[in-house]
Length: 166
Image (cartoon, rainbow, N blue to C red; front, top):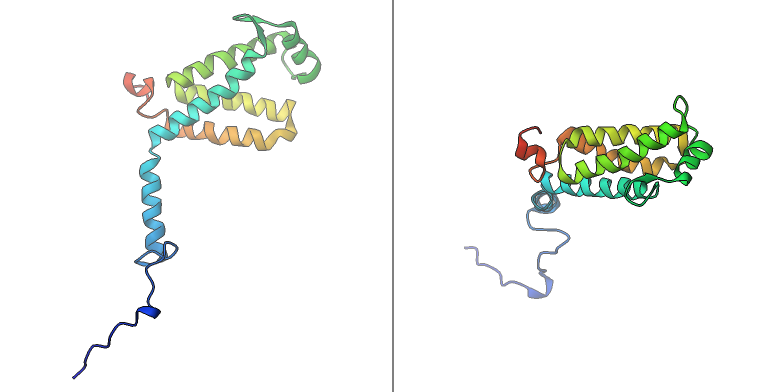
């Protein structure tokens, strides 16, 4: 007959946080499930929209005086530093300033989210190729946020969803 041996408490250990019960894979799967639950698409989309809006809005505000008068220094920036091909610097300054004001507002509202993100992605591509080619790490991080919005939309916390245009 097999008699149970007494438990040697000196040699037993409580399950470690590093090796959850059920093994490492099961622990990682639980962690992934919690992370997914804490970061739904609508939250990620809202954070992406606000982050991008902040970046481009702040840039837009450096190009104007008062509410919306494009500054002489903004025109000089496009004429002397940016020097975009195919567009006169005055037109480029006006287009960029308008885009950097309008599209961030639309992103915050979640209105025409995919179109707004796509427009800013195009603008970022122009900046990357023609203006600041060494700034690719920054531009790539912006592009990642924009591509998420282009592909997935603004989420349930966006006017697009409320209006049925997502």
